[in-house]
Length: 403
Image 1 (cartoon, rainbow, N blue to C red):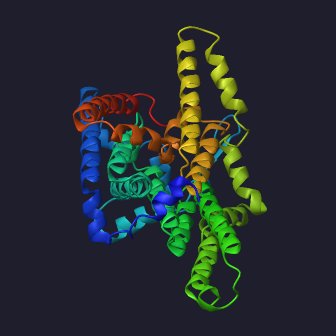
Image 2 (image 1 turned 60 degrees about the vertical axis):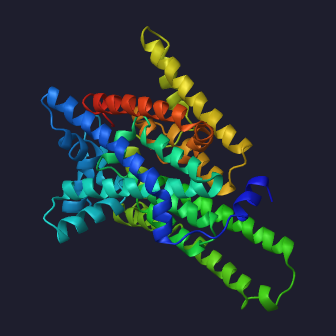
Image 3 (image 1 turned 180 degrees about the horizontal axis):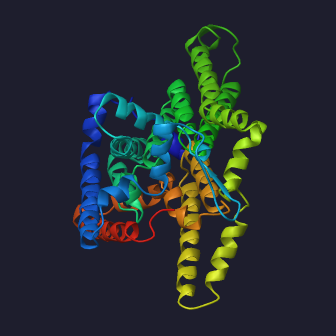
């Protein structure tokens, strides 16, 4: 076992829900305060530009596609003059299902329900991030991780009727379930994450890798076929739950992708054709590299190019630090896949920052460093960054916004 595994394994059992909520309450209150500041800045900025902040949050870009799925179901598409076909089959169904449910049981519109789902999901995501960081590094680092996630420059997306907050909540709690040995819960949550975004395969991979490693430890540490370690003993039941979690994890994503293939008549790979209609795919980062390189052909665009190179370098450095700090393997696998898929998509370069929102374990090294500072030193830093994030989010949504 690694040193980190020894520390986490030595922790006492997780508190029950009331105790866990009390433990996370300061972090959640801090998160809510940061997001409230961001929304206030958005309202004021939008009013100054004679725009509706609520419309920006609920009725533009992808949020329109989600509400259209909730209202009319799948089958809507837009054919562009250049031949591209934008089909709503590209959008996974869990968020629209929840929007439809919210509209059915309340007077809310589909867009209103999407906004409420995102607000609640963002709080659930913050709690899940706290739970993971608290389990690995302790309560103070958990609180810092939540605040860092809240003050990300594109943190305003967490309050939009998008699927990022819902996915992050499901992913974080699935990872926490893996770290605490709740295999069936981890599998169910991974399956739901797979119904939310294509990157749900990262959660499935984390569950599978953790389970395979656990099976390897079982084989190396135990050779008795019967008794307490046999199929009817406690360890045997744990292995059965582990297998069940592995089987459940990919069902959501696989089920939707296969359904899209059947609906389009193009077989198991039909979803890739849907994404191709949006000019979206995986090319190993070649298109993104060309996009960045093109920035250096003129000035001041070269400054943006420098910023992009620095941003990618920061991500790589943070991941290396995560490895050197010996984060649990499920977190490393999940973060690596989310980051690679975000950076190596072949189009929608402006969306990459928000696609990286679910990669919250990248923030843990920064959270650990922040947690080591005295509150008198860390609080001003967090407040200043929160203010900058609020202003940037307001500026961003009133400009080009998330594609």
